[in-house]
Image (cartoon, rainbow, N blue to C red; front, side):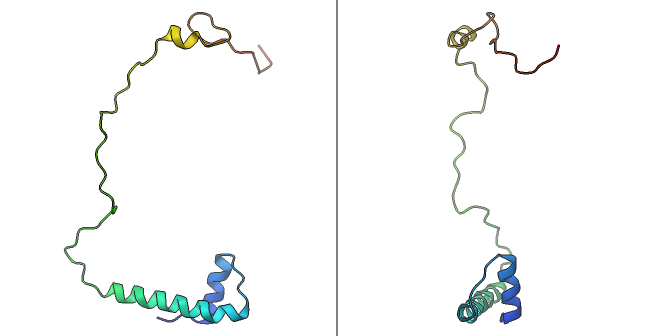
Length: 97
């Protein structure tokens, strides 16, 4: 498959590229070679080949994803400027009731 100048200019407009006239011919040839390679790949018989979703083998997490309490409330509230013993006290930022 080859790419004509009209198609190339359409692709350039979509990708917001503005190649000068001297680069357009080279870009059209490069795109044509890429499309020809894709056509060649389309000819390969892939029946019975399991799709590869990732080239990296992912190991399972080393631990179960279970919530756990690591710090006690008192230790967390100890760092706060103001608390009522159970919650942080913050300045009101919304006017009203």
